Length: 168
Image (tube, rainbow, N blue to C red; front, side):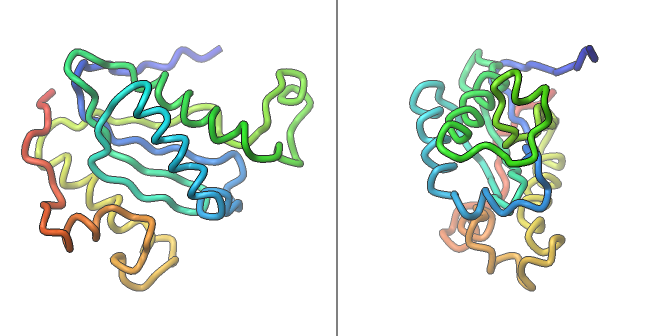
């Protein structure tokens, strides 16, 4: 088995990409209320701050800041993904090994994370979140995608970037 190297920095700020197993699926936008409930439940049990997020049909991008002294983002993602998966039907195209392990085949097994190093790095990843719906041709103007926090931050008067990002 491949040994994945993860950088766990207590109180760190991270950019994440999480994908559904089926890249053609619209499950995340169809069941956005369930996804939000799974995230709320996780935040209640294991607090963290969501700095920015975009929910796309089969992909989720988020920037999180973990609490003081905490570096456990993997357990949080496991909680969110498993809570969501419990409430949706299994994928029809699951392979035999997934069925044998009792996996529903909803999510890709892993996720991608990047520790935010400084304010410029934060600004770059916040821009990636804000423009993701445009890159997928879901909208002509990124502000028109309702499942993105970037335009809400700008229109509510809050800054779209975060001044207190942890340095590496």
